[in-house]
Length: 328
Image (cartoon, rainbow, N blue to C red; front, side, top):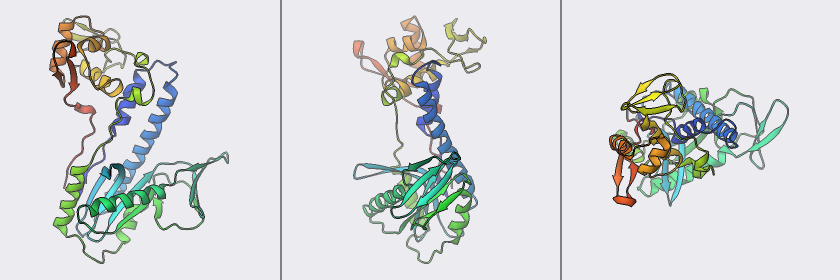
């Protein structure tokens, strides 16, 4: 039973918007592109894991949740995938690394080796899984649930892997996960069907999605470096102007009504969590404050305060907000 699907995270969406609004010669552009590339590669590996996991169809009751973040003792911990069975819970940590992986023992260490022979030590995914096992176990104990919590590390690429000594936590490729899970024996029923479903929805209810916004502050980018304007959905240029009660693209001629809503979303993702009429006029390249007020009133925003203290806040994050989907 799939309880929570995986969605593209907010940081990928925000960085995509940020890249479009940085000049080609901007000093931040390369590091933003690299960060975005790594996040998209990681997301691609996780989606590959999800695809293979659809082959896991056991006869016993179970629940699957992808990309879950919980809080225990004010500590946030994110799990790439979570499987709840009658006798244990399995946390999966998914890694997307194309190069050769060397797993050394005593002490346990993961090393990435390039074709050139260069080696770079990696943060141990096993240490990450062990941390999450500990935190999830305590999170469950707070709810009077005692059940073994296990973990595995899955690599999305079919790259070469050299393991000196097999660690306690299983390491495998994503295409092996379904077969591995099918091989596990359910020898004790700690949770019944209804209890599994109840726990899955309790986890879903307590999921707290990471909010990285505003990105300019997070990546130490001055707001003046972010290109203002309304982006054309047709040609992708920042060249739309408000004319005759429509947005018209001076580059390709596209005419639209609500293109400013994407600009508003970009503002909240990139620059600030509030937006004034003056700021909107600057960012959307509008001249008339009355037109700005009208457009803001129709956008997914709400007006807070009056007079000089008035500002707008994002009411709904619309199509750019990653949405969790319940399915059974």
